Length: 65
Figure 1 (cartoon, rainbow, N blue to C red):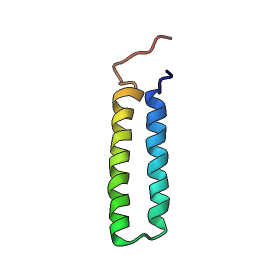
Figure 2 (cartoon, helix red, strand yellow; figure 1 turned 90 degrees about the vertical axis):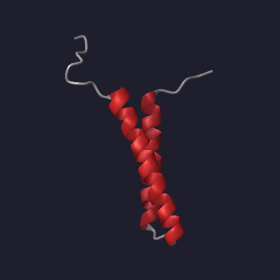
Figure 3 (cartoon, rainbow, N blue to C red; figure 1 turned 135 degrees about the vertical axis):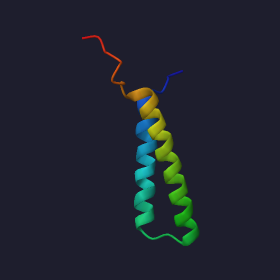
């Protein structure tokens, strides 16, 4: 069984959110637009959480040189 990295999950969430942005720009119905906007905010929030908790190095964290 192959694993998936946090980076891969982050990248996929961002890609899907970008796709939702493109769909929103095409002018969906009010209901469709609301659904896309809500899903987009949720995906970007999840991507931000992964980024903040897994992919960035805090100022006090030091990577070995």
